[in-house]
Amino acid sequence: MAVIRGTKPTRAVLIALKKRMKVAKTGHSLLKMKRDGLMIEFFEVLSKAKTVRKELVEALLKAEQRLQMAMAVEGSVAISSVAYSLQKEPVIQLESRNIMGVVVPKITSEAVRKKMFERGYGIIGTSAAIDEAADAYENLLDKVILAAEVETGMIRLVEDIDSTKRRVNALEFKVIPELKDTVKFIGMALEEMERDNVVKLKMLKGKSERKAAAEEAKKEAEKAAAVKASA
Image (cartoon, helix red, strand yellow):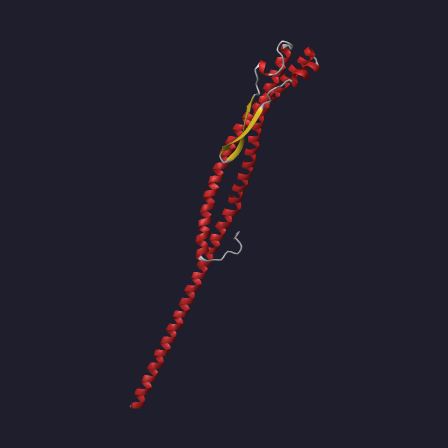
């Protein structure tokens, strides 16, 4: 029996422990619901993360292919010149959203996908290979941002699921059993104390009755002796 140390077997403590046990059971039930909900959300995010990761790898391979083609057609110097001509850099905004009490990131971006005339290099002096490479890398950056949002959210969910599991297990296998055992122990102790009190009361009552009977007998004896002496 795992009894909480230092617990005094009194009725006030028993009432307080019963209230604690009720709160612990309610918390355990709510945490289990949260854990199950987070698990469902996690598997949905995991499925999305797998798709996003696959698309990211495909986008990376395509971007590298387009870059190699552009370098073959235009040369590395022309590619470097085009890269330095970028006028408006992408803007990343980090926000947050709540999933069952778990704060996960929400990433929004601006100026990632650009129109041809917004890229900063001359249209006439470049070939379609450079345009295709630029488009492929813009698409890759979009995938990177999406993957960062999804995978970071998945990590946050895993961390909270693990934390929730530990709290559920602590309540289920330690806190609630200890409270049950302690309530049982105090109940048994109070019953034992009550039985002892009943025995003591009976003994006191018997002693009082015997004393009263002895005093009554003494009075009767004294009364009889007085009558005899007067006769």
